[in-house]
Length: 427
Image (tube, rainbow, N blue to C red; front, side, top):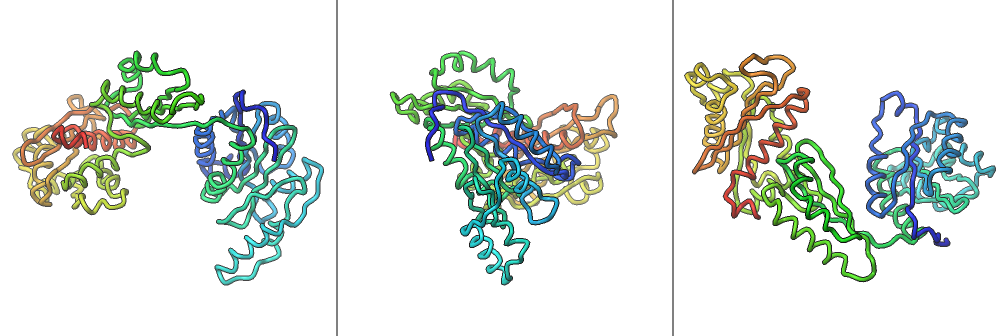
C-alpha cells in the first residue's frame, strides 16, 4: 500500500448508508454518527452523509457523486446473504470486475458457524466471494467481510450495517489503514465536560482563553441536554510535546470555570457523580415523582453503582408520598406536590428510610398537561438532603415531556455535585 501525498491537505470523507429500512425510518442510522466522530479524531473531515435505497442504479449514482467530493468514501449496509443485499454485486459491477473467493473470509465464516455447532450454508459461503479489485477487511464478529478499494488516489470501504460489526472493523482495521495511507499527523484530544451553563454563556466566559490557544490546538463546543462537552484537538507540529502543551491549556481552563467542570475525558454525569460518591464512601437514594425513576435508572447504568446507590421510591401519587415517603399531608395541602416544602421532605425522608448519606428528590409538571397559571408545565422542584443541609431548587423548562424529564434528571444529579462539600467536589 502506498501512502498518499495528501497529508498536507484536508482529507474529506463521505458516508453512504444503504438500505430501505433506513429511509423508511425502521432503523435509526447510528453508524454515521460513530464514523463521523472516529474520523474526526484522526483529522478526517466529513463532507456529506447520504442514505440510499437498495437499488443498484441509485447506489452507483451516489458513488459517482461522492467521488467528486471526497477522498474517502465509507459505505455501510447491504452485505447480508439475502437477495435484497446488493452492495457487493453492485460494487463489482461498478468497477467492471468479477467476484473471487477470499480464503481468509471463508475461514472466518466457517469458524463462526463452527462455534455455533453448525455447517456453513452455501448462501453464507457466497459471502466470502468478493470483487476482484478489493482487499478484504476481516469481520471477526459476523459473516460479511468488508471491502477496501483504492481507486484514483481515493479510498472506498464497504462495511456491514450491523453496528457492532462495523465498529469493530473501523477500530481494528479501517482507521489505522486510513492514517497510514494518508500519512496523517499525530492528533491528540482532550475533553472537558461542563454542566450548568449554556453554550453561548460558556463561550463568553472562556473567550480570552480560546482566543489565545496555540495555532495547532482547536476547540469545539458539543452541547447536549444541559451540558457542554469541550473538545480540544491538537495537531503535532513536531516541535513541542503535544500532550504537555494540551494539558497546560486544560489546566488554564480549569482555573477559569471550575464550578462548571464535572469531569475530564468522555465521562457521563451519572458516572462522574458515581465516582465521587464511591471515592468518598457516600451512599445515595432517590425519591422521584415527575422523573418516574429516571434518576435511579441513570445511576444504575454505571457498573459498580451498588456501592453507592441503595434504592428509590417512585412517589408519583400523593398517596405514595404520604404513605410510603412520610410526606406530611399538611405540607401537601398547604403548598402542593410541586413545591419546595414537599420536595425537601421527600429528599429528607428517603434518606432516612434508605439509611443513606444523601437523599435526592424531584417533583414537577412534566407536561404536556397538568399545568396551571401558578405552576405551568415545566415547573419542577428538585432537592438534595444530607445530615447537615437540605438544598432545594426550582427549575422552569419549556420543552417536551421527555426532554423535561431528561433535563430534570441531569440538573438533579448536578445538584448533588454542587451540594457536596468543596473538598468532595474536587475529587
